[in-house]
Length: 377
Ligand code: GMT
Image (cartoon, rainbow, N blue to C red; front, side, top):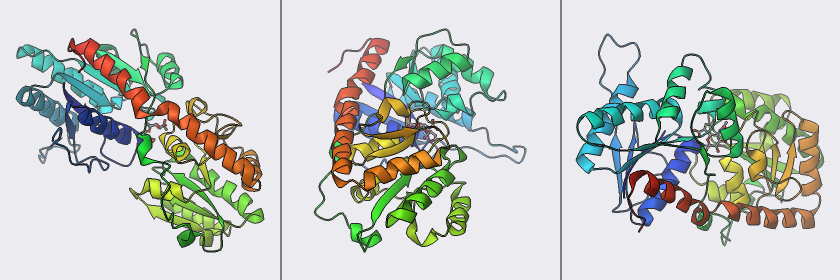
């Protein structure tokens, strides 16, 4: 099949999932065309089946805001026609779903019929999409999509609650390529950050307010009082300087290491003892799945789709949003008991295997086949 994938190229779960999906589809023989405003950051694999089309946005002195959605729509029309695509799969509703809708209608007027699938990822529904400045368009584009998927049952329910949706939403959970995680590296280089055998707690995100990273630092500060430990923070974003200031105020700055927008996620997880995810809202929590696949137990909140991934008392522990004491206590219970920590790590790996590429990819392929009428090879 020839598939067009539209996604955000930046450091964020939806772009990661879209990229991994495209790479996996290409490995299975599909031709995959990524369409975005810059190269997705994890798209650094070489394959004869992978293509990238950049969306140029023409500027003009009249424009205070660049009309990206129009440029994207035009690019979609162009790529679908010239590459003879069979299907468009857009990740994150804003503005990808409405651009795909418009492209589909333009293409129809030119005699080319192509279905599009919208995959909802989280903040496009729970945060941004509900804003009155987006809502009518998002609702319409969801209803007009040929297929709609959500990355968790929680997100499916939220979509039905917040929007007037008159169509089926299929839950297709996020997945990861297990081969990339939990590798027994000869050397995890743990001593680089924990030279005296300290425990390593890790958080990875785009540092947006919804992640409540201040809570990560507060939990760490409590753990740090009792257990020699380091906090690794991977990623970057708007909360970075607040987090740094808080770590200074709490007196733990010397044991908090900011790693920036690194791609070496598996390496970081390889040296981690515990993963922290303190989000206010989270439709899935891809980073926690990556941690679990690496055998790292997860201390998280119990919001949104997180409980569908992290299992209480099995792969980690879940607490109410903002319950610093409970999260810190759960973290310490695990860190103080090596046997329990190891058991939870093994269980986390087993849990992560439920979200393997092998298990999830066929769900997308079956949907593609149903919507295009093309057989699966
Ligand atoms: O992380 C975000 O805030 C944005 C969004 C994205 O585009 O990366 O993340 C969402 O999609 C991920 C992939 O499906 C999910 O794992 C995240 O849980 C979800 N974020 C939120 O719901 C806050």
